[in-house]
Length: 157
Length: 157
DNA sequence: CCTTCCGGTGGACGGATTGACCAGTGGACC
DNA sequence: GGTCCACTGGTCAATCCGTCCACCGGAAGG
Image (cartoon, rainbow over all chains, first blue to last red; front, side):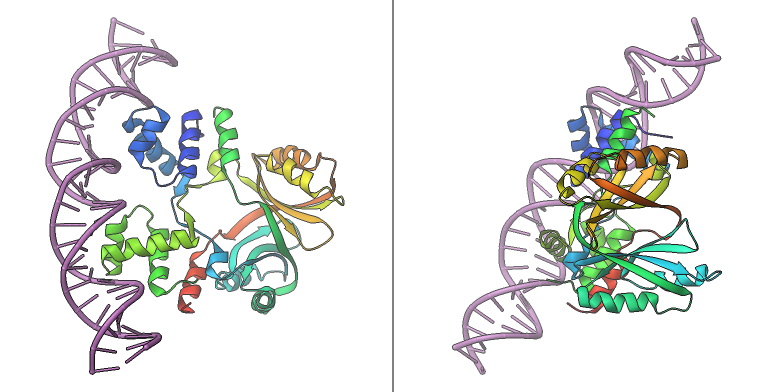
């Protein structure tokens, strides 16, 4: 389990230019096409590459506001809260974190005003005691993975 | 700007089965191939679909621990802190949020012990006054976009 | 009512890529 | 020496891609 330098270069290449196919990738990497195919198969069955889903921008969908909310959960209500939040489209992800039954989620909304509606949707549920929200103003480092891939490849796993 | 139901179905289909091509997608959706191609082109130039980058799992790379950190930044040090954090591979994303020069980032590490190293890396910088970290235990709702896409499509933008 | 515009349809074309094979080679390991 | 494994370089038929085209219907505007 782990990736070598060729895997790292392959992932980086695919991340930079997702449109290229196996053949073009093999040309760029200077290896045989079969090698790239084998690597890709392995990376996917490994679970290193989960898939190639479309990367959708919520802002372009009309949801330009992002916020993070910390939720305090009533004891034993965890399961219900999860079900509730997974039913809210504006909840893009949900984590349970260390602490006193705390959860943590990423929200999007159509506007700052609309964010109030979303928060009401999220908090308007019995198991949630309290919520504190932080609105995102800038995103200096968008979600990325390449630097980590390169580091993992350097560590010659 | 916005997406209709066909766009929504197309995005959902691509998210579920990224391997399928334009031709197969047109068959599934019951429309002509040219239509799917035109829609895809439009969605991409719109910026709704940013791309089809590989979805890499940090855990499979050897970084199974995720944490979120809130950073308090010294006045006027924002730019330097961003540069510093963007140079740390374990920082997967960084946001500036409402509050007193606060920032917010997602971290990964090889283990709970290794997380200490990462945090030291992150915090060991002049402009950062204080950091509070929450370790992720579970991830009931992984980062997702489809429910939002479907809602946006229903709203018949 | 007529005209124009626009998105979708169904079809076609050649070039390119894919997935699947194969024998051969070199290094690592026992 | 023998075995295993990954990579190479090549072939094959099947498929898909990007790009054209003529045609149609509805919507909007005159």
